[in-house]
Amino acid sequence: MHDYYLCLTLLGRADESESAFKSRLYAFWTHILRNRPDDYEGVYSEAVEFEEEAGRVSRQYMIQPNVADAIAADLTAHGVDFHPVDRDDHYSKAEASSSEWFQLD
Image 1 (tube, one colour):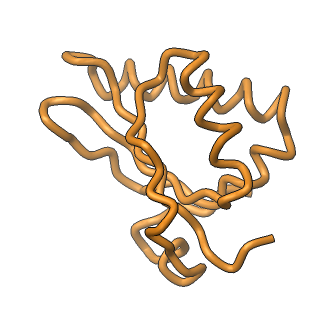
Image 2 (cartoon, helix red, strand yellow):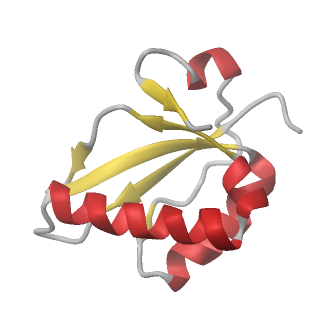
């Protein structure tokens, strides 16, 4: 287990509504939880709010470094766009559990 987290930013499709993106994310994370529970355990928290980047809905997650590659591969396989994870940008547990983040259990 690592003592830091990485930030993973997922992106909706161009012109995709927040509710449609939320539905796709729900389906994706349900798939991970059912089929790769050990990887899901490495997803520590989710941003409380959706954001917008260049006209696209986005959502951020704090993940453990050891699951970054597996989650990225699954995102690609499921057609969910994301920014490459910056492995040099570390976040502490305190940062990943502030009021801006919802801890996943």
